Length: 456
Image (cartoon, rainbow, N blue to C red; front, top):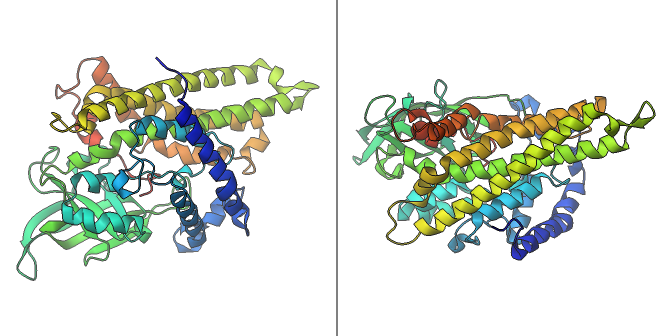
């Protein structure tokens, strides 16, 4: 068993660091762009007089960072070669190593590392489930910035219980006489709705409430008659682009269906595990950042004539956090490596099941372990950093309050902490695939809660 990064992975991480120093930092330090990263970040990023939406200048800056990363060959790293990616055989391991590194990097300190190496759940759904027409149309547009899609599973009254959704789609005839569907319902926490060109809407097309089958996914143009953004929800970490959307008698052609009819929840499984393990890596990296900054501060801070670090009340919490972070780091990397092995095995022609199904069956519980524990650990490490730094830690001149607010969401999104623990419990107590784990195995696998933070 090898515990060290391979030479080519270390070299790739070094290239990312050089790119950040050569391109991203100069961009950040130009003009008055630092206002988006320092203690002024939240008011600078937010249009308070326009519903709390993101400042276009901030989004334009992130767009420039993505463009630079794309030109340098980093941004599309995890996707298929035919669309500009590297399709590395150890993509999950490398992505976790990169996210661990970047989230613990002083440049980021809990910031948006996705602008350097992208996360592409929308691409994966189109790539694996789209018709040839959908792929030919939407994927090129996606990388040109002309196709931006929200993920519509969570509703006003339904989150992790996604199979109980209220949104319904019924067959109808369109004005030209062709077959289509009429959609009625609502979706909440629709990240990116303010600039989305399309909405991916999951709706019940058959069966009873609570049944995983009978749900279909539709690609709905954002400007369709009957689509109304009701509100944008203010959140702990601003700005917001998380909308509540109402669908009233929205008509779409049959060609708008993405994936299998009546089995739409299956398409969300395509990216769920990748998102969860990568998020765990980011949270673990941010936790390490908080720990290392706290240790450094405690060693340099003098109180009552001696270093703050000489107090066991300071040492012990950091000892526990550091121990947990190191054990978690190893579990994340091992699990990611096992995911890659399964991915390679089940991607071969004639495989008995898609690789993401095989990953769920063999590693779903381990991925949940990584995800729920990492997200919790990050918020604990940030909270402890605030305490160690005292009044300085509470101020926005230190990054810890921002890290806490930014990462606190992940104990809810991508499947809540309780749902993740239920999945682990189902494995431990033998309830997996017995029907007693319905919430953690069926709805959870599609009910990513919301796609806050998974910027499409």
